[in-house]
Every structure is written in C-alpha cells, then in structure tokens.
Length: 101
Image 1 (spheres, rainbow, N blue to C red):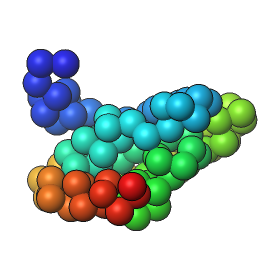
Image 2: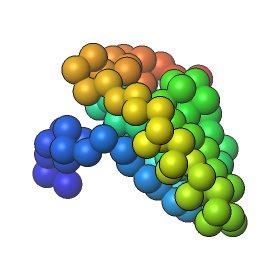
Image 3: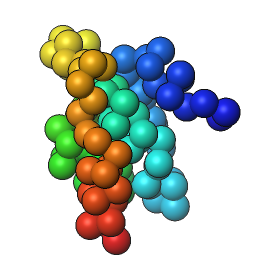
C-alpha cells in the first residue's frame, strides 16, 4: 500500500481474521491501533498481545464465526474510536513490539 495512513484514516474498525499461527503477528494491527482504529482480530499470540496491551479492540476465536459476530456487535456498541488523539504514538508501538520479542 502506497500510503497506509490514508487508508487507516478512512476506517473506524479493522477486522483481521486468521487461523494461521505463522501470520499471527500482523503489522497491520499495530498500524491500525496507532491510527486510532478499533480492531477485531483472531485470538493468536502476537495479535493477542497488541490488543490486550492497548485495549484497542476485541479478540475472537478463529474457529468460531459466532464469536466474531459477537465481537463485531461489541465494537459497534462501545463506539470507542479515537481518530483525533491516536491511541499510541509510533514510539509506543515500537516499544510494545520490542517487548514481544
């Protein structure tokens, strides 16, 4: 993507379903959180840590589509989107990522 900032500024919620542990840490999740997007992601090790530490969204069981539906309802219901005041500064994203390693 040429300019991900434009993309993230155009969305309120990022949904990233995955059941592949090899792609469990997605930089896209960190970028979305940094941009103030709420995230709904599969409960996988790398993504789990980002969501829990940032309180930026919800985790769902990747083998349960009903759990995904419930988490989508919750993110719409809670209405927490902070586009003006990014949830994290880029330095915070890097620091949290380094702690995971």
